[in-house]
Amino acid sequence: MGDTDGKARFELYRGADAKDYGEHGIQRVDDITPAIAEGLAHYMAGEDDAHGQIVELLYGAPGVSLTKVWFKSGFPLPLHSHSGDCLYYILAGSIKLGTEVLGTGDGFFVGNDVPYTYTAGPEGVEVLEFRNTNELNIRFMARNKSFWEKAGKKIGERREVWKQEQPPSTLV
Image (cartoon, rainbow, N blue to C red; front, side, top):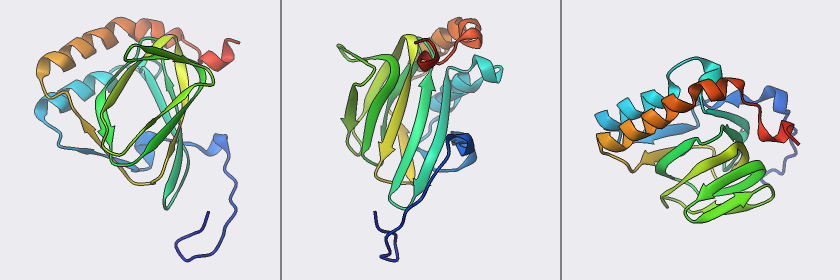
């Protein structure tokens, strides 16, 4: 892959150096409403080990990024879109995407600005996200308070379970 100055490059990255998604500023939220802001607060409330998601940037450079995500069991990913193409690969666990259940070794592609949602399976899911950008906007589609209250209730019911959960890759 070429760099912006036209020179070819080769780089290594180490998983141990991955940064939490909140530490690198790769993603910005577009069109946030009070209902969305309040709803997102439910997702991040509580102790760190009770959060239903761990999102780490493994690698980012102009025009490319790689993220590893662990969504814990039953995690309800809200309907949203991104301002870049995304290719997903399931490392371990499963998801329910519409009427489809995808598991280890499966994946899916979501184009720029295409809304999608899924729910992590009973053992959770670990996913690699390949993106054609290192700057990304996210837009949440659910704008009504009732959606976010329902998601917040689901999350609240799972927090104690999530504290004890291990990534599905460690369960094999």
